[in-house]
Length: 375
Image (cartoon, rainbow, N blue to C red; front, side, top):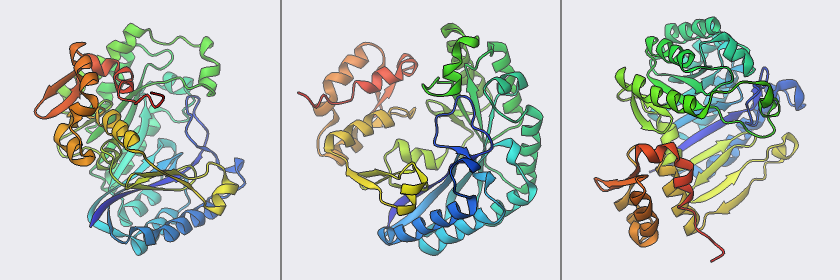
């Protein structure tokens, strides 16, 4: 039996955040109601099931957008469709993303009843002024109310999303956010630095904001690791921290190049080294015709390295040889030696991993593992 993870993309949101470049939009903008979209999603799940008869589903992730915007009963219907068509492991990790302003007691009870066992709540900051500057429509109090609803419903695995380097944010205000977050004792914390993406409203208006300096951004980054470690959170990926036993199994599938099937508008899949992405516009998605791309050996090796290096344990040398039929040093020895010489990578316990300095400039290090196909 092979392992498989499922991703369900729910593109709807109440209002798009100023920094967001994900495929999401207010429901009224696309001419497709949530009921119709749920039907399309379930149809895709059913049509794809025949491909996965030999697979067992180990994780399911509802992402977006804001999946908790779906009307009462929609999530239960999707889960019933999955269970009817796929073999879902009894201990599967099933995650629901939620923005605080959409928390509703009856919906959260529905999620528990249909088997969802992990919640991921987008907080970003506990400072209301910082939330307003990035276009979030909740405040800290609303988050606390949502968190209490989730805990009181019985969820015992909760992630909180945080962001650093926000406009107007200081090291001290970010410290307050971290301290308030850990006082709630979530099992998992994702902490990312804001990236200004071209085409987003925040990027277009960037001159009107005072962003933290590079030194302040670096201080926030170091503070995250130090403070969370002191509170018992193990850093297992560049931006992800967990209490013992609560690493996100679903996201590790991506970083370790496991098999995953994505359903919904714009969702990506990668199964047995074949990758495809669903159409990003509703009309084309209704026709359901993804274009599949078998990955070349070079593309597989590249992904193994730059995804695996995100993990704190690094990339396994023996597994590379088993998977690709060639020693890692035969393929990448020169690059690895160079990066080790610069203090950006290290070899230890049969693995190659980023050093502290390497994490600081991880994008540069990972880019070294791309092949020059023009040679």
